[in-house]
Image 1: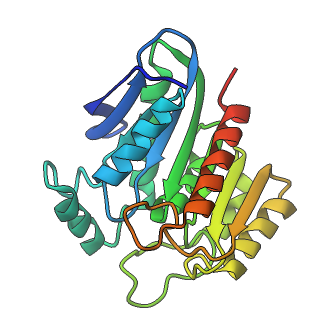
Image 2 (image 1 turned 180 degrees about the horizontal axis):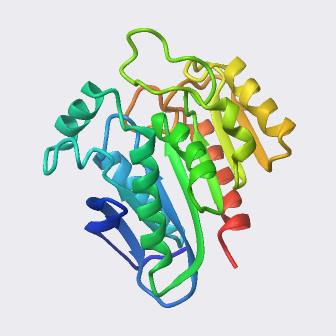
Length: 246
């Protein structure tokens, strides 16, 4: 735990330039892991920034790339999210570039222990699993990420393809947290993804909560489920404690 951290908007380098990001960095020299927070489809907003700060309070350096920076530089979060949605969301190739930039930023900090994890919510959960395939990370948390498996419904604002056929390429342990009342992903899709991980011999743990649907972590939404969220945070803390510390 840490009660001394600095949070601010910064710029991080990526393979194709620079993007805006939000960071919360622990202000001591003790070696520690880092977390790349992948924001949800509604964007780089205050609730997502609060998650970044929470990881710093838990003792991790944390950074959240603004995935919509190129779509609407300098725009308010709602406007940037609208611009991103109009284009079908963040292309997977660009997501990988931005998460890689975040991971490299964290590893370059003087108090980094070299270990980095990702976490994502909603579309970010899917992107966290993708990062476990494409990016050099040590752990990935998927909070109700849809369309890792299962086709995107007609008319859905997110224009991506599932990548269940690539699960054999996962390179990091995965923690999955899901609601049993969710439809994106549905319990059947969660079970399908779990089977793919199991068949591929990957390290993972999945937890699904009764009475919880999509966005049960979101304290500012009616979907919030305190018991599920509290237990979920305990699972995240233990998972990162195992894979990002030391």
